[in-house]
Image (cartoon, rainbow, N blue to C red; front, side, top):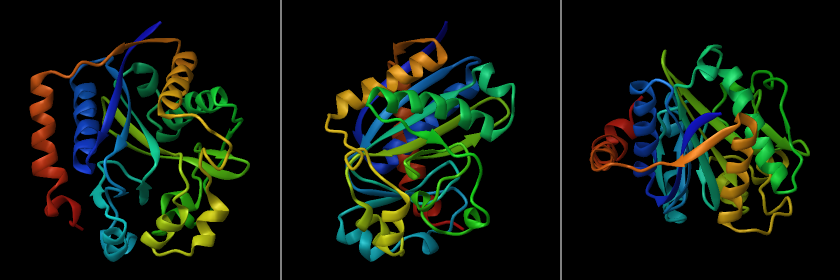
Length: 262
């Protein structure tokens, strides 16, 4: 049985959320065999976009102001996501089972299998996508306008969107699990027609889920425990961790140099 840490976190600012995920990735790089599963929320509606995206191409600042939101560049790849009325998961790990195969898709497959089990605990039978849609991944369309290989769809509609960062010794993968229906705002924010996202994505509420945040976290934690035969210990941040996160949030993820570079 593997020993993982479980971090059931609160709702935080965009900068704080990315800083915590980077801190966990750093711990995975520093500690062989370290793994932490984190669930969290967002204090404000947040537009996050991929590490290599140009912010001018992926969202409308006026729309972000209209919904009272904020934006942040992720340390991972992928496309733009609106985090609003959702549960976000993150896994940071240097577990050898993930690193034996250096393929991003191999890790996606392993984690998607756990996420599928979590959805099954909610009474939702979803499936993984077999391959990338031709050509579309090179566009600036938002994340939920199409599923990429090994991501999860429910009745052919994307229900979880994920992104990853890897090094030689560790990886970070985090992803959005939409609960409430904010597809129209997401579309306007990312300059696409609402009908596009209505035809490509769904949410847990639209799929019939009527439970609360605690039920969601419990279901997905159970999915990970079953898939990886793991025992999860509570993650206890130290004062050093807290200081590192505050520094990262202030100096990096709140910085115009980071969020508006490229």
